Amino acid sequence: MKVLFDATCVTKNKAGVGVYVANLLRELASMPHSFQLFVLVQDDDPSMDFGGRPNVRTIRVPAKIFRILPFRFLLEQIILPILVLWYRIDVVHSPHYSLPLMCFGARRIVTIHDMTFYNMPEFHDRFKVFYFRLFIWASAHLADGLIFVSHSAERDFRSRFNHYRNRSWVIHHGKSEAFRANLEPGQIERVRRTYELGTNFALYIGTLEPRKNVARLVDAFVSIAAKHPELTLVIAGMKGWMYDGIYEAVANSGLESRVKFTGFIPEEDKPYLLAASTIFIYPSLYEGFGIPVLESLACGIPTVTSDISSLPEVAGKAALLIDPTQKEQISLAMDRLLSDSSLYERLRKEAILQAAKFTWRKTAQQTLTSYEDVISDEKYSRF
Image 1 (spheres, rainbow, N blue to C red):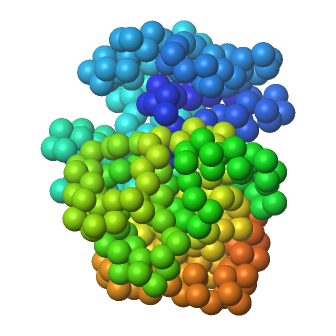
Image 2: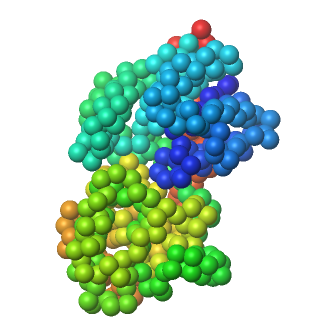
Image 3: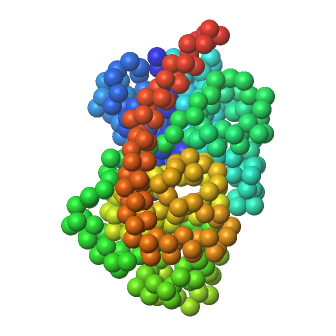
């Protein structure tokens, strides 16, 4: 079996989809040689090098051209099908909604992460809404198999495309073994010094964009700031889009000195940043999965997150779940964690147990099974 994995969608600063792709490929590349993996990557990202293994071939394309969306579209629709013919590929895995419209007999699997382009179009620019709606529609009609990252994502997809009858799988994300309890204190202190953090802070990690609900988190922090005068709020993550409201909320809070923006956090620093935090807050309005919540739980950090979409699926009973549209619920949950030591310690223990259910190895094994399933279909013929 020959599999072509299109990883050209991955940005150098990895969040969300990038974390998924990098970890999934790393596990797939380390699995027994029951299949041959061709990985299509941008040539400016050394972290996406999976060579040196007899069953893996890395195909690099010039990033100075193909990081530009119109050219990446041509790569996907013209060059990728040529590679399918050249290498006699059996399965093409497109991990970010879109897929090659023509594939010369190869099976096509697409990962659907969420349905925000349908459910929350106001949180995206118009071109992205058009582009990704088009390809989600195409996937619903052309893909031989769909991978959903949560049951929630699958339900949202099927509420709009209930005619889809080809194979599908719910395959959860995992978490790196770097995210664990009892990390080295010296590394935790290194990260604390690097980002100039205090000893008592509430942490948010994620891209700054409106769906993440960070402006309301700032307002909730203001509500409890007087009761917890030593607490600061740390907002970690790169700027995404439509983020001006977050900075306006901080400017209007009167607590600018107690809110810290770190910018993008490299993967190697994230576990230690989480371990340094007092509590983790992720009040997103919608998630296909919610990797930051899983990583927080894996580090044993008491967590507050939303009671909607996939987040209860990830957190289980190991976090406080709130209605993210209600500022008072966010602030009350934060205050409970900071004030109730028995609750705090109970959630620390439950968090580690819950996170242990999710591993990237399991994600890779189930993904490999999806490849095998889709070509075992009796309808499959290479040409």
